[in-house]
Structure formats: C-alpha cells, structure tokens
Image (cartoon, rainbow, N blue to C red; front, side):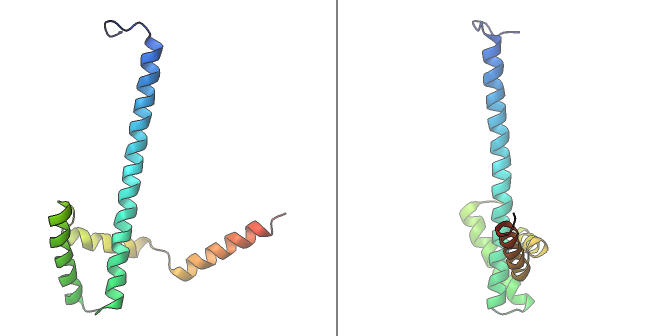
Length: 115
C-alpha cells in the first residue's frame, strides 16, 4: 500500500532497498572495526607484558589500572575481565611473525614467478 501522496511505488522500493543495503554495510563495518580494535588492544597488552615483568600479579595490576582509566574515559566495555578476553583473543588468533613473514614471502614468489 502506497503512503498517501506518493505515486511511484518503484521509487519507494528502490530508495528503501538502498537504505537497507547501506544500513547492513554500516553494521558489518562497525563489527569489523570493533573486532580489529579489540584484537589490537589484546596485542598491545601482550606486548606490554613481554617487555615488563611477566608475573601474573603484575599483569593483573596493569589490567585493573587500564580498566579503571578506559572505563572512565570511554564508558562500559572495558572491565578487567573484558581486557583479559581481548588479550586471550589476540593470543588465540594471532599468527606468529615467522609464519606470517613466510606466508608473505611465498605469496610474493608465487606471484612473481607465475607464467
């Protein structure tokens, strides 16, 4: 059923489809950005641990302090537990540098020497 005063059903359908498509793309982009950001937060935490003391108590103190400051600045979502999960996310899904470098080298050679 057409809204009162609108005479072109196809125009309404086309604009509606465009807007729905744009909204879906925004959701995907936001989700992707959040995942990549949390991965990077985890990486930064792990790298800080490797350069500092490796004791568990030190790590807990750092995460607790980070949690307090990040929550104050950015709001919910940065509890100590969430930061621990970001750290674990990075550890679970990161590719070791040597493997990553080998992969890039292989990709380069396979591209250069393909006839």
